[in-house]
Image (cartoon, rainbow, N blue to C red):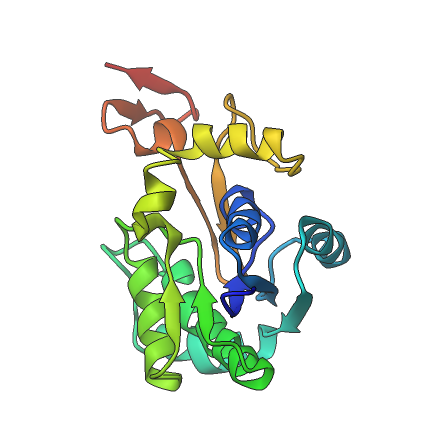
Length: 210
C-alpha cells in the first residue's frame, strides 16, 4: 500500500534522480516536478528519464517570466549581492521553485513534498519555508536529514554507486562530481575539490593542493 503521494523538486541530476528511486523504495508515489528557470536543459529527455525511473507523473513548468518579474528584478532593485560579488541566483530561485511545487501538490492532492537539498546548507530552509508558508499542512521529506538515507549514502560517491546498481543515468563521475546550478541569473558550482578548503584556486583555473 502506498504511503502517499510526494511532489519531488526534480532536476534530473545525481541527487534527485537517486532520491526519486529511493522514495519509491520507501513506498511513495512520486510526482516529479522540473522548473524551467532558464537553465540549458533538454526538458523532454528529463521527462523521459523521470518516467523511466518510475515517476507517476511529470510536470515541467515554465517559470522564466515569473522568476524574472517576481524574484530577479526585486533582488536587483534591492542590490541583493552577497559579499560584493555573489548575485544570489540560486537563493532567489528556490522560493520560485517552491511556490510552483506547492501549487502542484495542492492540485494533485499530494500530502508530501520533497527536495534534494543537503542538511547542511541554506537551500533546505528556502524550499521548506516557502512550502510551509503556502501550504502549512504539507509534510516535507528531506532525505539528507532522514537517518535511513544519510546513513546509507555518505556522499556523492555512494549515490553514484547506487545509480549504477539501479541503472540510473547520471551526468557525473567520481572524477568529475560537480554539481552545477544554472538559471537565467547565474550559474554556481559545488562538490569535489571546490568544497575542500585546502585547495586554492589560481587565476589560470588550476588549483594548488596543500
